[in-house]
Image 1 (cartoon, helix red, strand yellow):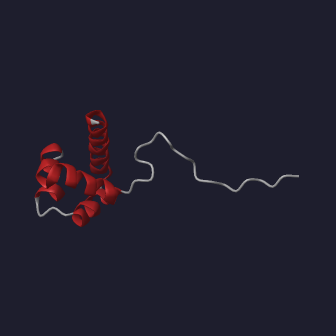
Image 2 (cartoon, helix red, strand yellow):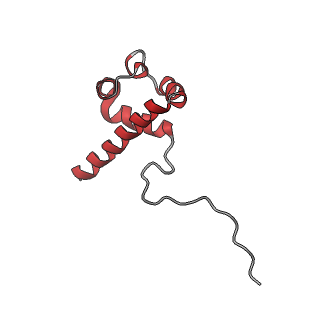
Image 3 (tube, rainbow, N blue to C red):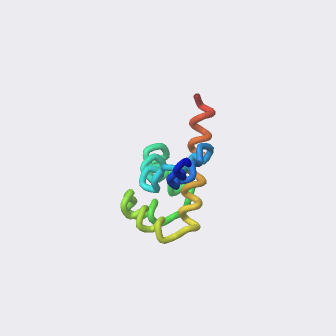
Length: 85
């Protein structure tokens, strides 16, 4: 008899967000676009009024629609970077 395999987390090899934390996303976006550039692309107060990674994370974790916009911009940035190569 063979032993059953232990349950494993489902893998998502084609999902670019898999394994990336929200903190990593916000950090990379702020480094790529700058806070002002982020505020121009997504009109959120956490990007315009005394922006920081910590304040942005606090807001985005509580606000699903805003998080979706940020994740969408992150995916757009990744596509831009791939095209540039």
